Each structure stands twice: as C-alpha cells, then as structure tokens.
Length: 363
Image (cartoon, rainbow, N blue to C red; front, side):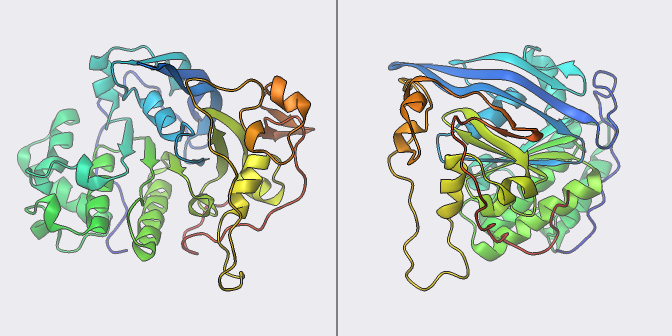
C-alpha cells in the first residue's frame, strides 16, 4: 500500500444531531431488528430479531451463507431498503434512533456518518461519469467547500487508498481501471466525508486472492487510523480471522453465535459455525482432500420450519430441536459468548488462515 491513510480534513455536517462518541464507547446499538419483504409468495423474513452493540474503533465480522440475511442486516441499519420492505425494532446510532427518521434526514447520515462499500464496484460506480466527479459529488453534498478544495481532497483520498498517479486516475472512467483499483475508488468515496461507521459488504468479491489481501489490509489500516467502527460482511471465515474483534454468525436471518474472535475460534459452540469452519480448505491438507460440505440447503424464508432453523441440516439435531426454537443466550457463565443451540458442540476447530498475515486485529 502506498500513501498515507490519514483522513482528509473534514467537518461532519450532522455533528449537531449525532452525539460525539469516544473511542471504545458504544456507537451502534441494534435491538430486536426484524426486516420483512412482501412478495407474491408471501412475506420473506430476511432478518429476525437481531440484537448487538458495536463500540467505536472496533470491527464486527458478520458471516454466513448466501441468503443468511447478513447483507440485508447492513442495509436495514443504513435504511437502504426497497419500497416492499418493512423494519421493526430499534437502531440507535450515537444515541439517536435512526430506524424511523425521514429520508431527508437519512441523506445527512449517509456518507457523513455512515458509509457502505458495496460488493461489485463495476455496478456501484457510474460507468459514464469520471472517477473524480463521483468522489467530489459526495464532498459537495455534505461539506461546504469550493471546487478547488474538493479536487484537492479527492486527490488525497486516492493517495490514501494506495492509488498511484491519482491526478490521472481522477480523469478516468471506471471501465479503464482494474477490479482492485475500482474497489479502492469505492473505498475512497465511502471515506470521503470521514464517516464514523463503515459497512463493507463482501468487499473482495470477484477479486483475485492477492488483491483481496491488499484491499482487506487497506480497510483495516484505514479503520484503525480513523478510529471508525466497521461491520465486515462475508461468507468466508478466513476473511474475518485476524481482522475482526468480534464475530457474529448468521443463519436464516438470525445470529446463531456471537463472540470475540479468539473465543469463537477457540471454542466453537454452534454446529453451523463448526460446519462453516470445517468447509474451509487448510494449508496442511493433503492434495485432493475432499472438503466437508454442509448437507442440505438453507430454509425457505417464506415458509420457515418449526423449531431450530438449522435442525434439518444438523448432524446433532434431536426431537427438541425440531419443535422448539433456541434463543441466543450466554454460553454458561461466559456473557461474551452467545449461542442459540439446545445442544452446543464442544471443542475447537482449526482457525482459518487470514487472507494476509499483516495488519491483524487484536483483542
């Protein structure tokens, strides 16, 4: 990575609304969040009763298969929902309830206080607008600055995310850049106004392994330098290993296990988490070793089964699991390790190797 990761000078336009939060104080509080979508087949229960806190300067990894609700969770918190969606529960950001505020007020929140890095920069970026224009648009939206200052800030942002020759890149269109370079531009746009909360939704999708490591290391360095909170959404536990302070595992719209990263990898309790870890290839495996797949498929979110939603795929399921849904609760006396399982598994599973060995999160 080249260049500095220091944030360009910027003043948050909505600081008068959202209270200051010191490092390690709670920035985001989510309580009993439900997100539903109306569809021709019926109601889709995409997020079901999710609760968690996130402190300033910390990273929460949200992990699960496709359809588990992890991306919908991030969009629900930010209010980036289609017209057929409904949300209930509570989302408090810097002490302010943001679940039911008006779209006009949400616009002051997006970019300025909360930002999101989307999965595919090729579709998220406007293909017919130069990169520089797309960065300065966000700056003009939230900050009272001149065109000259906006252009200078855009240059510094591109430098801070490791883009060489930033003055030339500002004049380019997205299709003239590589996938990794486009993702760096997306990061620059997301960080333009100095947000306190960053959502990274599968930020390395479709990138090769080397570029994945560079992007993840860059995100972690920027998050540390700026004391941001970050929610890192991924299907790969190897992405969050060594990068997230805490990990929440989602299945069928619910958090089924949540713990500090070291605690979770050292003492896996939910069968689904165990199955995810066992399905990851490891360096010490012999050539052509068959990976352990998770039998079955995720449940239909319109017609959810009774009892534990993982029971039809769980090798440890018993009669109680098929009739009574477990609640997320502390694992014995350990209040930091939460698990939703009637019969938690015991023991540890080999920790996946992080995509890169540098810039790891520490507890």
